Image (tube, rainbow, N blue to C red; front, side):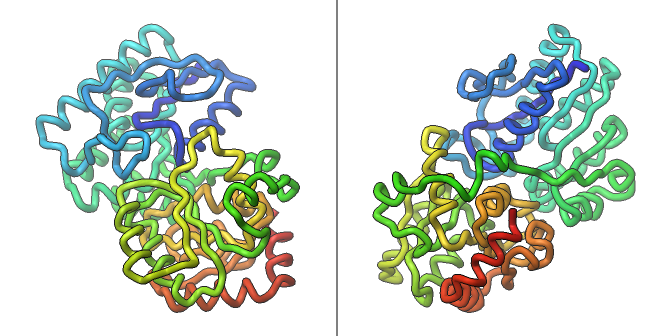
Length: 364
């Protein structure tokens, strides 16, 4: 089967980008796959790629690689039309050249709009993998809500990462979406993320002692809740390392300074060239913390990577995170936004090596 995978954003780091890499790599084993994306030369995967020509960069959330990207909700009507039309025109060029049997499009908006228009023109089935912004953005910008509903007749399936993600799509987009939503949880490479990794390089580079610190990884934006973890840090008895980048980086630095914290370090964003160090940190840390505060955390690939590394996860009980941790069986769930509960649970888990080992064994 000839499959055209479409991805409209910067594709060099982050959960959804990893999912693109992993799913495309798996499909390549038995199908003819092409990927359509902006700036394809920067995406490191050995598969033929097409350039999704865009008039300007757009993201639904912050990007370290695209710091100049416009935000979906800040686009004028004219800008949105220009962007959506450019996506469609470039998609049509690719279809004419590749003649795919199916289009797999990431994001309902606005790339899904282009795919739906292409279905009308070429009658090629379209499957959309939804991401968190597909639900959060329409709640604040009705252009995307109405647009999302309009494309539903042209879409064969919409996949969500967790049961809660799927239910949320149905709630926002209504009855027709309910007929097309399928839950396909994300996964991770259990051979790349394993408890058996040698961590000496990371321990030396970051001056850390194995199993004596707490780790947070992700995009620095408000909904990810890292400011809650920083607030909790004043009561946490262990060192904390944060890996990531994004719009909230400077605010987090100021918060650390304001609280006069000495047990927390922001290490910045780790690109592909530092992924081996991230894998080492997953193994070296005692706990990985996911302090998200909104339902937009549809699953969290950081959590999957940590679990695959045999590392206990403490996460907010929101969105797809209870599903990720099997409702607390393979990790600890806390109330979203509650810094006191977060610090109590982290301190409790840090004080019990036996409990951490028990959870770590279950997580694999």
